[in-house]
Each structure stands twice: as structure tokens, then as C-alpha cells.
Image 1 (cartoon, rainbow, N blue to C red):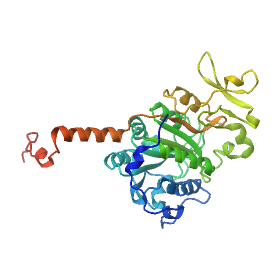
Image 2 (spheres, helix red, strand yellow):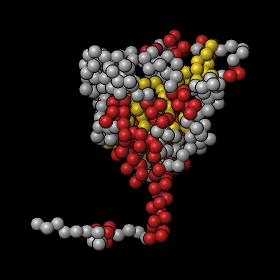
Image 3 (cartoon, rainbow, N blue to C red):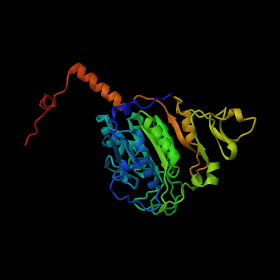
Image 4 (cartoon, rainbow, N blue to C red):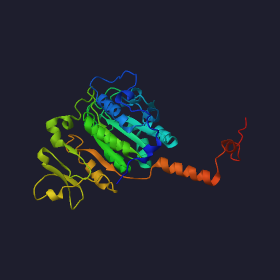
Length: 352
């Protein structure tokens, strides 16, 4: 079972107790009124004091998009970087400065289109990063084109006859890339969002948190089935480690494994099948069940959507492995000499 992130001990602690106010910058927050980003920002600002870390040693790196304005509004260090490249930039920062708590804020377009390769390689390397992927299933900043998570048939400015692309499931993608921590939450559920952020912060290595986020201008109501009280009871599967996977009115539905195919199915709970209800194990070494859980959600209706921590396992952390290699090299060969390297035998003169 994963332990508390010991890498956090490398980050200097705050000298005094902090509050949400300490993490609010002096910049005017400029998102469309009603945008789900406001709720996520408030949750993150409210959660940061729990870490007890010095603000000067917390960094938010973003790419391009509505969500990527995030660093402006956090009273920490931060960088509004290049489209899709936030994980690459954050990897360099986290690997070279282990005294920093590094967070990436990205969107479904930024992370899964131009930034797709950077994302999956950060996940497979298991760099000590916390990646918050805001998924509104649309390109909001550029005014409403379909995105890599938009459903098939989505009519937008760039797909007037309906999108032909099959959408990515970000959680499935992350699990397939061997991510050691994968979770999903919803912008409007402050309590659940905060609990997931807490679990991500405690995880050593890359933690990916997909946040369903409403774009009320270009894709309003995309996740209404998960937010409406009556519909959500039948649609949302809340995962809790060590507990049977039950949901619906009076826990009338559950998730079972098909004994022949190994697939997972939603069933009406009866006395006969109650003992077969799957117990969630977020720490299972194999990603098989976590991946199967991620596939339960219907991409069009969002019925049977799991939220919570799907996977939380220990894997070697890239930053630690690299630091160990550098220490070994210094012990065996001494500190390097950059001047000698540049003036060594491996150089040449270009004739004029």
C-alpha cells in the first residue's frame, strides 16, 4: 500500500500557518462568469495551506488554454508556458529542483492534442508531478471547436456536421501509460475535489487528476447528468478503496466481474449476487481492474461514471532515480568539469 509522499519532506515548510488568502494573487481573475474554473481555483487555494509548504517552493506550470491562466491567480511561483508542453517543462523543473512541489494545470485540448506525447511520457516516467487536467470536452479559449474529448457527432464551429473522431478517455489513457496515480473528480463537488487533491499530493510520483469542468459558454451542461442530484445518484459511481462498488438509490446497483470475459458490468443488486459485488482496490499492482472501471462510463450519456481514485500504486520515482545516478557518478568519477568537456577531443573547427 502506498505510503505518504516522503518527497514532500524535501520541500521547505512554511514558517507560519497559512490560509486560503495567502494563496490568492493580486491579479484579477478573468474567466467567463459561471466558468467551472472558478470552483477549481477556490478548491486549490483552499487546499494549499494543508500542505504546510512554503509558498516560494510551490510552482504551477501551465500550457495554453482557459485553464492555463491558473498560475496568474496563485500566489506561488508559476509559468504560463507553451501549448501542450507544460509536462515537459515541469519535468525539467521537478528533476533539477527536488525542493519544489510542482503542479501542472492543463486542459483536454492542451494535454491530449498537441501535448499528448508529453503527457504520456511524464506519466510513464513517473516524475514527481501533480497534473490537474481540466476536461470541458471543448476548446473554450479559441471559441468552441471540438476537442479530443468531445463525443462523436458533436456539432461545433469546426465540425458543423458532427465530429467523426472517437474521443479520448483521459483516465483510460493515463492507466494505459502506466500512471501510478489516476483519479477523476468534478468541479462543483468541493469536498470530493479536495479529497482527491489531498490524495494526489500524498502520492510519490506522477498523479493525474481529471476534473470534469463546465464551460457554460461553449459546452454548457456537458456534465449535468453527474451534477443534477436526482440523475447523479444513478449515474455516478463513487469509488472508495476497500469498499464494495455500490451506487444508485439505496445502493441498488453494483459492479461485478464477468467470470468468463473478465469484463466489469453494472447489475441490479440482489441477495444472490451481493457477494459478487467488486470491492475497490486502488492499490492493486495490476492496472487491469482500474482500466476496466475507467471503461464503464458511456462517452455519450456519461451514465455509470466512476469518480474518485482509480489507481494509487508505488513505482520508482524518476527524480529520485536520476538523483541517485548523479550521486553515484560523483562518487565514482568526481564532479564534472564543463570547461574541460567543451575543450576536449570531441570538437571540430568549421572552415570559413
